[in-house]
Image (cartoon, rainbow, N blue to C red; front, side, top):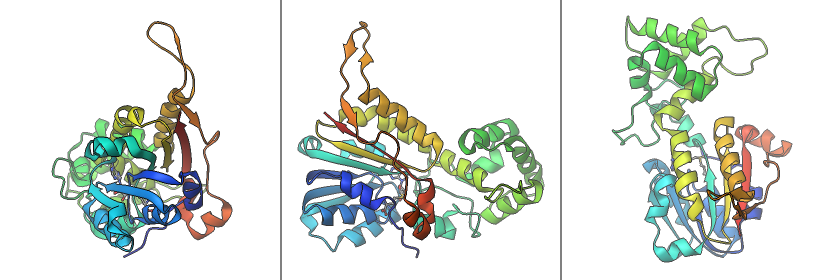
Length: 304
Ligand SMILES: C[S@@+](CC[C@H](N)C(=O)[O-])C[C@H]1O[C@@H](n2cnc3c(N)ncnc32)[C@H](O)[C@@H]1O
């Protein structure tokens, strides 16, 4: 199976403090987690991922390090704070989120994340989570307006209405159950603009993945419920891969790093300082060896 290459690794390691409890909320293949533990021998780490397969892969990776320095939880990062003890909460000095999916997930056809491999139209990070709809359920059940809105909102796809119409028409003859069916359908009807470098189904697949996993909802939940609770001295690093996520992170970080006015009209001092005036992006050398780093944006703050 493909191994995920951690993005902006040097930058993440440079931002981590020398010691304390580190949280990696999106463990993936454990690449960042392992490197953090190795680079900072005085640190301990709690890693989490909502995908049980990623949890197992991270455990395999971290098994090479002393067991008393780490543990892995199968949890959404938005619920991870609740899995920490009171004493752990006080010791958190670093919280990393590297959002989205791993290369291993993208490359396993049976997850249905990629239009390049044929697989069931599923897309759930946790395939045992029956509460979440699969992408096939959305594609085959939503009405044309809701489908178009979803593709526009989460994919920022200009052709959302046409794509929704094509889907709804096609499913009248037979349900759309595989990634290949959906990708072929979209490319048969949507002309790629010569300047577009991406496949015509890219943004629709992105939109479905975000909706299936409620990715923006989870991020909002973490930004509003966990972030404000992090203790003084804690550094927070978030790596996002599209503007929808980055916008949410930027806004939440600004609220913490700029003076705010409270309900009585009084000025409230900022709770954190920004460690990245502009988002950090990958250097050309990294992009060449790891093309997925091209769209990564890293923002970091430190609680005062
Ligand atoms: C880009 S990968 C992380 C790669 C990792 N940093 C590494 O170096 O191997 C993102 C991971 O986040 C996980 N994920 C996505 N949404 C999540 C959520 N709400 N809570 C926890 N994990 C999530 C995915 O399952 C995936 O494994």
